[in-house]
Image (cartoon, rainbow, N blue to C red; front, side):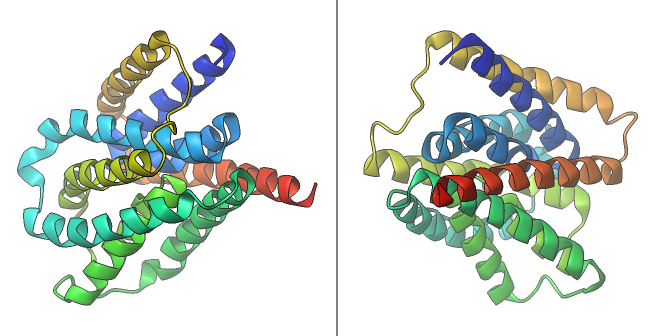
Length: 250
């Protein structure tokens, strides 16, 4: 991996970690499409899974008291199943198909979240929780993006923002770890080839991004952060989708 490519990955990681700290999610939405463009479908998604786990682990102590553990258990149980199935499917898809999958999943999930913002349902029903967890785990393994499914569920059920953002952190740790474990079992050589300094820079980027996000929380509203995440995610997803389609048609 070249220094220029490494620095681009680090920059994207800083922005994603800052968004994650401010809004509770957004890391994968921002980072996944760009990582796939830079590193390819399989390595890019696996790297997003790893960085997402690290980011959520570092944020979790700051939001521990607001976590809804009952909701976490329900979502996580079904997300693990989806993660394993998604990891198996990912090993059987080409890099171009993975790129198309990432772009399509992100764009579709964001569109559904916007379309259904006026609808409201109860959080008591168990089937929607199970469906949200299963779909989230599946998309996390295929595209490195597990947030949109549970985000749409939160919007539909009026899940309070503070509890939602906090609960997502242990949820992302569990689903990310399940996805990483399944992928490495199926393909032990799936990690991106990189020197030690690259991993050290990524860890520093996540810590720096979280610190930046905490500072920005004093000046930026959650609504503004979500709009920024949506705009950037749409742009990255569209570029990734185009890259995959060009590869398939070439």
